[in-house]
Length: 168
Image (cartoon, rainbow, N blue to C red):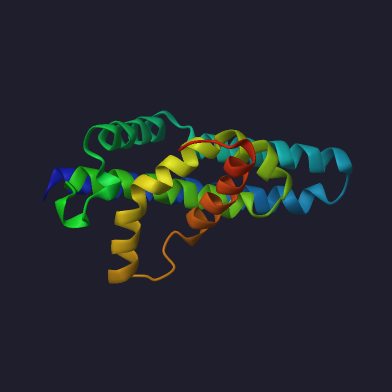
């Protein structure tokens, strides 16, 4: 068995299990939060923590950092996917999956746009730009709506970026 492949599969499974746990906890907290306003605040705070724990975990930051370095060095966002190395594809997949899960959670509360998306817009947009060749390749070959929540997130980040006149 290819240990690199097994490690990659394990990381993907771990990300999905964390997301399932977060979503389950949020649903449970959401049901409880209807009882009082204080509980609603706790739920909102828990949602923010869940998103940050997913996208700011050390391994995810390292993966994003690696993609950013490769982009700065090799401009992989402009390369045909056939020229990508396997490790670049895997990194783009992990980042896309994490942002897509976080976006699915963030879509549930419009306040999260200002609190989470706005401050993270540059990282979100750079990640989206770099991952585009991989996302499009996977969509063309497998699933047309793959990581559509990440796409939604990038569009929301773009709005804030345009308002702030960011250069990405």
